[in-house]
Every structure is written in C-alpha cells, then in structure tokens.
Length: 185
Image (cartoon, rainbow, N blue to C red; front, top):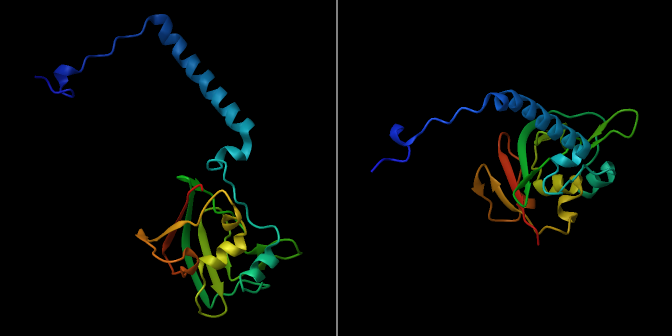
C-alpha cells in the first residue's frame, strides 16, 4: 500500500497549454485589480469584525468622569505602565480605537490617566500617583462595548488564564494582555 504523501503517490501536474500559460498572468492581474477595487469601494467597514465597530466615545470628558477619573492637561508619568487589550466579537477581532480617554476637542489635548493613543490595543496608564486602574474604567471611557445590546457580558482572560470574576474588576498591570470575547445573545 502506498502512503498518500509518498513520492510514488504524487504525480507531476500536467503542463498547461501554451495559450493558457500566457493568459494566466492576465487573469491573476485582473482578479487582483478587481479584489482591490472591491476592498476600496467597501471602505473602512471592510475591516470591521462581523459588522462590529466600536469607535471611541465622542463625549470623552463626560465618559472619563463617568469612569470616576479626571481629565488632565498633560500626561502624568509617576505611574507609567502599558497593558495590551484584545477584543473579539463572535470570534472576529474588534479594533480597540485610538483616543479612548483623550479629548482633542480643545486647543490642546486633555488626557485621562487611562487612555489609548493608537489602534494597537496598547492601553496607557499614565498617572500622577500609583493606584489601581481597572478594565471597567476603560470600558466606561470607551463607551460602547457594554452598551451594544447584541452581545452579553464578555468572557475574559489575563495573560491566557481565564478570569473567573467580573471583567470590569481586572486591574491593569504592566506587560499583561487582557483578552475579551463577546458572543451574540
């Protein structure tokens, strides 16, 4: 009996006809151009996970106050740590938006001690004092994941270990990765 992957069981692919060899690159270029055109026409929504898009709140100062924090005129660095946040909705990764906790509506930006600068999922804790800052505070600043009625409460992991309690109670620690998984109701 011959193994399915042994050299004896593998046959060489047949060579395409001469005309087909010339047409193949043209077909590939046409398909690539058509795919690119479709992606460009779809715009940013094409990158949204399963139709889930949770942009940063527009009313940043109000959301920060709701989270029990205070807006600062400058970033404070007595406490300066970074945690990575990964969010999934029905198995698709959701982008953690830039500017959670940063108010850019005035002449100069104002900052919550808990904020994001970009869409990498890096959460910055930059405070004038060492204290605990929680995921619940960040989600309140973000304003949307818990308000989206399509999903129930998320399951959470910290550095790959399941979190048994309420995800809101997770305290940010330097270098850790927090993963949230939301599923449809």
